[in-house]
Image (cartoon, rainbow over all chains, first blue to last red; front, top):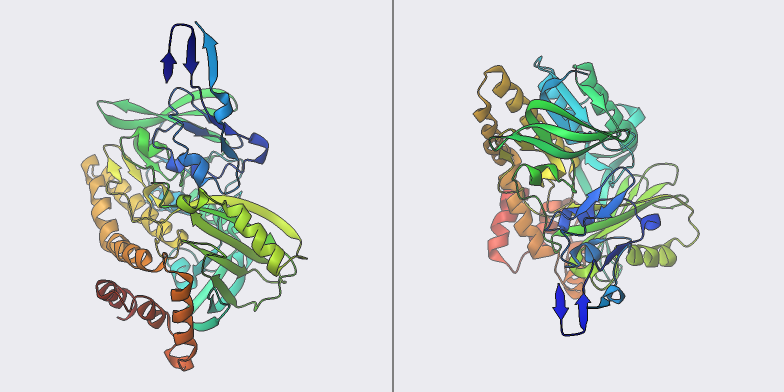
Length: 79
Length: 388
């Protein structure tokens, strides 16, 4: 999502964060992701940035608070 | 390994192993792929099943039975306890050993098995699934098959790639967390269920004994509750309040889709079984037996389709599953919707009325009947399920 005026472009990036050390790789987040934006291997999880819409359903479904919605990642870029 | 198989099964849980076993015993070639290093580990399960359900598929063996269950205990929010004898026998499994045994059964019938194999796509030709793409030891591979059976659990992506809608609404996905703890002084033959907002709103908390004072203690809540408070916070509070001095031997998280089976579980060249197909009992959250039933039907149907050289026959699986358990799960789901969102007062009221009943009238059917007494349409479902 991009908002743009003459000088500033607001770029909303991937706002969902995973804390990999805490993750149990249980798959709840994958099961609820409507965009198929989460990949889960044996002990590796990642969000596919181009597919994620930051809807946060994965955050709400995580039993152990591994996923977080981080609004601080909204970046402002000069244009 | 061959270049091509009749059937590739993705996922070596109970549903996948039983599907493989039933398919390979008909003499066709089956490859089962598992993303984890070990079949059956990590265990993401409360491990409670009915003995009769297991006996349909495998002869009981003490090496994978941790405890025998003869009673249920329901604990309401005001701590009223209702004990109900179990009509039959339940067991608490050692899933690590049990899952190995099921995979071994499949192997003995000719299934080839490869672990640490991450399936990351499907081979599609003319909109028909005809194989999988996978990563093994850092290298990409492809292997063809006539049919792919997706047994890849709650996180199933195989179905999505095959054109089946597998994702669950976050309000229907129960996020579960469980520990196995020591020094838990409970009756070793009773499964305990705690209800209410303190323990697990829109879900329940369980204590399943595993012998030698060990027990699985866990709970599941929906994503709707998880918005405000996570499952791990509920469990930590419970343990601090009830078992503050019990060492925790292991901890595991997992998702339980409390929904009826997906509308479509078959597409050209692909079938889904177990959690991937949402074949879990939506009332109890139990998925082992129903997954094995789904797997057995799928395995047999897939093998018959290959032997008769008519792959359209795989659609029979949807019909057979629906007849065997699918319709029943839809009823369970309606009952669940009537029970899981009760207020604490309602749970207390039900518990009080059951405690007053004589022992012989305390049955699961009566519990369900009391629970939905104010909802006549649900009473019909309860009667169909419990009061036959």
